[in-house]
Image (tube, rainbow, N blue to C red; front, side):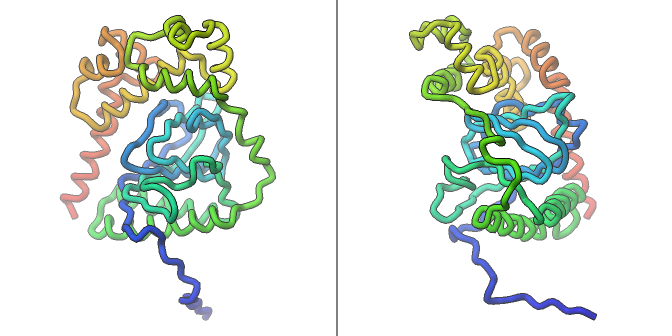
Length: 302
């Protein structure tokens, strides 16, 4: 028999003094990653994503990052991000959202400083972290008695692993310069800022160029080179991403949502959404509603 003791003098208190709250956990199978969750941000939480298999690119705050199996991705509250997967870059992952998160020395719901690298390899902690995500997801899915309380402590365990990785980063064969492309420069961020503020209005390449007093060709070249998107595609993905958020989090009907994100014609909005997400807005909403109803029924049966 072998017995392992807890080294009490090694226990690490969680910083911040406020108990964080686990909001949700998602599991994305590789075949599901072709249905993108496009450009969006979360105002009330931070997200931790574990890349379980595959590789691809994430757009985070105007920069493109390579992600691959064994990486953790940290998404601060308010930071726009986009999962840039397609049929050739399938990525399986877990994601958890945490609210009321107060890391020492950082604003609420901020995991890493704004200038820090948001992609961190797990190294030999990968399997431990993967199992934590797996337990979190399975417990919330089955909603058995005590699941919420258990998941709180599993989340705290996950955050402890995150703290250790951030304090003692794993050496990686791939240099950070290879993980990240150059990203947007000063002009690129001006263009991005204008689009983020006005994407729900009737704007296009010509009107943006006139507003910023630069040529449409130069604007398109600078933005595409820095972000990986054409300005028109970025507008489209901002609109779809906001529509997805509204479909998930509100009871607004599709006509109302199409207007809120910049489409006067609901039929055109339905066509664009279906083309780029892989399912209609109503089906997309229903896919989340079914998950919610399943969890509620499971809870009522315990």
